[in-house]
Image 1 (tube, rainbow, N blue to C red):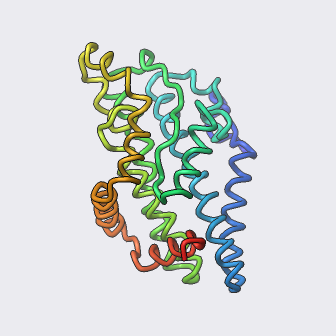
Image 2 (cartoon, rainbow, N blue to C red):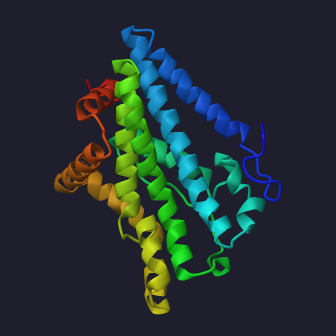
Length: 253
């Protein structure tokens, strides 16, 4: 595999990431067989593996922008290889988001890469590093929406639901809540006293958010209404996304 970047940085795409891409493609291929079991299994695999791929891309985007903005330590940490094992915490970055998706259909943001904020060139650069991940999810949603009309309907249903998940991930990540990327965008402009006060409960804020989304129906309703609007704005097909969601949660039927 050729180098992803220049010889100066020389990170290479991880075989683990390529394996996730192949599994995602395999799930899509299963939907083409046409039997109920194959279609259901294919969509489950497509969505779970595709979500894992997007988690890698999300974290990679943070690291990529950080590298370009002055923190070159991300190269030595292996963040530019797209290897899920290289990120801050495999459980937080990979396992928990997959479990949350299975339990509640909510793509809760995972753990972040470790960035040396002091090495970044400016406060604007620090904000850009935080914004890079959510924007990647939004771009993925747009690209998936473009692909849907070009594939058979059942595969399109799986891709549409995966695109909707990307939109939900974008919205959740961009919220100005401690521990999420939206807060990271604001953080460089906050007073040190505010950062210190917030740091005490920042690790728990995303879990509290997930609890509210699962237990308080109006909160989840508002989230999905906003996601539906943004999903439509990027060209998503809500009918196919609903079909994909129904097939993904086959045990709820």
